[in-house]
Structures are given as structure tokens and as C-alpha cells.
Image 1: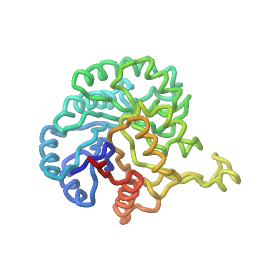
Image 2: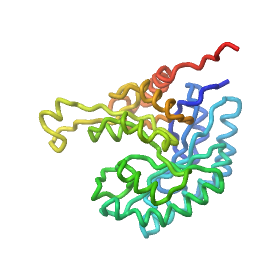
Image 3: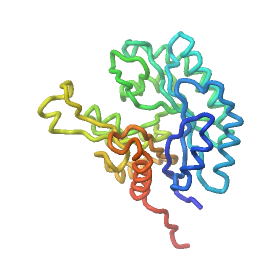
Length: 296
């Protein structure tokens, strides 16, 4: 039986093939799964999906760590309305999957400075956060910039500590936090460790994704030149020391899952995708250590 407070798992797309995909990869030793949807849950029957997923996981000790929808719920269009409705549906369905975390992007007003997006963020997520609190659910916002900056962008404001301060002040509820990963810091040449230490109590879920930064390219061409200087990587292939990351998570009282966000690595992709993910799984388990009970 599993006894550690930090699980290592992976992301799985939500939909008709979720249960079959879980059945195929479960034997590799994944301990948790984050079920994700892009922009909307669509016509997915979440009750049926939960039953199918729970049937696959029965007897395995693996869990569903979180449910996610990645869209832009702050706009005033049909796609945003579907994303907002999907947040509500996942909040209501979380208990069916045995989890208490729903994650995604905050959204963003198109090419509007982050501080000017806060009123709309507050309008959209206050009722969702209150709905979640009533259901015993926490909301976690991913720290991906989706190509945005402080002044421009179209998907997510929750990618900088300055934004987090504004967000948490605007909705001061304990069930609002972060879905964090070091990758998005490294590709902006930020040291993720001081940030992790400062914000660890607000981190509810961790994406297992790393980055490799080519310092020689930065020194020769800068970050706006024609040559790529940073690449998203599966843990175990990037620049981060995940032993240090997990140590800081433990020090900060984090309990939950690190779920590998695959399908980004430029080397372990295609036919090597699951090779890379299973290597990342085993690497993260080594960084975590194997639980050993103390003598009675």
C-alpha cells in the first residue's frame, strides 16, 4: 500500500478514451492521474467517466489527483462561457473522482495589462471559488504564461508572483492557490527555488515539467534572437534538481501529487513519449525517496 504524502503521476486527457488509456499505462507504476480538458468538457458525461475511471483504478491504490480545464473564462464570448460552465461542472463532479482539486488557467482580457484584468478575474472566480468551498474543493491556477507578458497576452494572468499577489488579495479565500511547475520560471531565466520557498503554502498541485536552458545561446544571441535558447523537458532530462524541489515541498507542508505534463519534450516524443514519461516517473520517485516506516 502507498504511504507517502507526495504521489508521482501523469496527466491524462479527459474523454471517451480516458479509461482505456489509464488501463494501458497504470502498470508502469503511476500513482496519480490528473484528468485534463481543453477549453471545455464538451458533452462528456462526468458521472459515467468517473465510474469508468474508478473501475480501472480499483485495487491499484492509484488516485485521481485533480480535474482540469484549460481555456479563457474571462472573455465575453461563447467559448469563454463554455469554459466557465466547465469549471462549475468539474467542481460539482470532483467528489465522484475522489479528488478535491480543480485546475486551469485564470483566463485574461486580450492584450490587457494583468492588473487591469483583476476586476474581471474577481467577477468570474469569486462565485466559482465560493461554489468550490461549499463542495470542499480547491482551485489551482497553472503558472503558464501561454506566450503572454505583463502587458499583453490572451490566456492566463497567473504566471508571475506580482499577479498572484493581486489575485489572492482580490479573492482572499483559502481554497484558491497555484498549480506550479519550475519549467515556466526557467524559460524566463528565473531561478524557481526562491519562488517555490516563498509560495509553497499556496501550491496545491504540481505539474511535473522541467526545462533545459542553453546558456551559450543566451550569451551569444540573447533571448530574442533567431536561435531557441530554452526547451520544455520531462523531469529527469532538464536542469532542475527535483530532489531539492521535493524537499522544499515537504518543508512547506505540501501533500498531494506531482503529475508529469508530457507531450512537450523535444527528444522523448513520438514513439519515445512513454519511454520519457516512465523515465521521469522513476526519476521523480528516486528524488522523493521510498517511504520507510520508523521503528515502533
